[in-house]
Length: 138
Length: 403
Image (cartoon, helix red, strand yellow):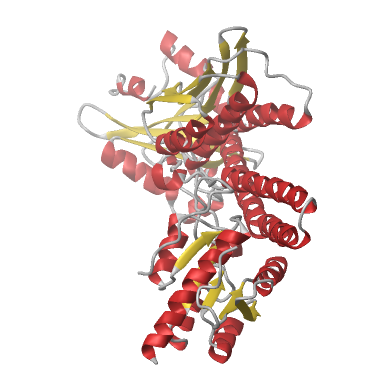
């Protein structure tokens, strides 16, 4: 397991997935990490946008096929939360989904089925970017 | 038939006792009779009696509009048909006519205007054929075609639904299980961690297989790229990945109707799956050729040539499915196996133009190739993207950088 990207400041993670089992598993995985904080979890776009504005996450883990629209959610969250990094975590790895999400401004794209370690490493890397962006703007 | 009356234009139109008149009088398959310039029946033959039910003495002298249904009489069709025959020399029509007993039959009618040497109209020759049976046969064919179209579309829709269910539910659930297993492995330490990792590996292998399944169930994109391109892509991207050498030979006169193309693709897909499972082959050759108003397709491998007949139910089902698909399309399907040489799946399906649905067809000539679009299903809207060929379940895909 890699060390925390920015010692001292935990990375706040918001989880957005409409599948209950997956959301719960993701939440557990995040909560098990000392350097990550589960800031909230959302099952649709409205919830995600509301939560993002309230908890100001550093990293949002987002499904592509998300009720209310994955790309729409990404765009909205990026507009509302300065420095936030969106990490797509999708069952779809096709080109269409990738370019759609890239156009919405996401920072990373992972296909479901990868190891927890890989997912966490990506969350940490994006978390470090978000924290760096925030400290620059301070 | 129509030209013959024109060879006797001059003089009285009354039948003479020649062999020719005898022939015309005796023909049973065609109603051949004459009308005077005003449209009254002036001669009658055995065929006309058989088709229309009137004896000569009942009908001679009656106006020929008696053969038309009321709606045609109201539209002055008999009158207009004679006018057209005078203007153009002849008129051909297909439509409903009425027998003496009031029943309807589907008739092919040719009316020829008969002019004498001075150019004066002397009457009309009329040849009538009863096309009711042919029309019924055409309609049966149209109906069969319609059912086939519906069946193929329903099958494809059902496959897509299953693919989405697998993708959205089964895969997600198993991914969640895998994540929890890894989490647990991190917590419990050895010796359990090792066992849990093995479980997690199995789960992720199963996820990979489900991805493959859901990809296989997806529509092959024939509507966008055509049959040959869809087959070629499948051979390169999927079958090539199994380590089989592939080749595709094609000589198509034209792109087959969409449902025919899907049938061919699905049968070839199943045949290739069979090769992968049983043949222990190095190479597989696929050929598609236009033949006998249809398409002849071969999938030949260089494997063991062991008969693919098996006692495993789901594999037997694959063979049955191939045959059923080909036969439902109105074609045939065979499997030859020669030990040491290989196995060949061969099938032929007719390529009839797809009839426009729910359109009553008076004749085959009116059949129009109609392309159908599968009606939008809510799931279609929810999932605009088609998954790519299965990605290795344990090799993560590189994330995209920030735009």
